[in-house]
Image (cartoon, rainbow, N blue to C red; front, side):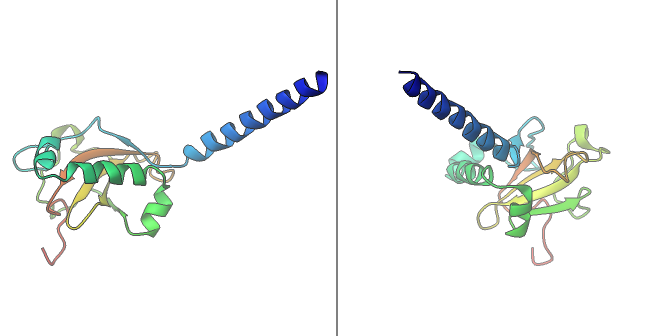
Length: 148
């Protein structure tokens, strides 16, 4: 009987180690925070607009996929671009609450011209932990390229 208890105990301890490793690995992945989410007639779109256009599910699927990656992986595959300061040619107005902050502005490429716009805090940009979502950008208006 004590041999059975020892095997059970050993399996339990092993499972704890596996869970600890899993949780430790998860802390390297990007996470999303919508505290500063903003939309106005001239800057970004609402979730309701994306739902009406039948593209909200795509955003949710992308967020799920992005959440399994690190910032370095997202940069390497071209999904994440870090602008640094707020782009001068942006067609979006910077929300007043974020104006003059040291936010490190970025974009995540979704599908086609769609982008998710946000920032990292300066303290976190190297670790790339929390991406603060600010805008949904359906038409690549936040930082348009010279082709736009």
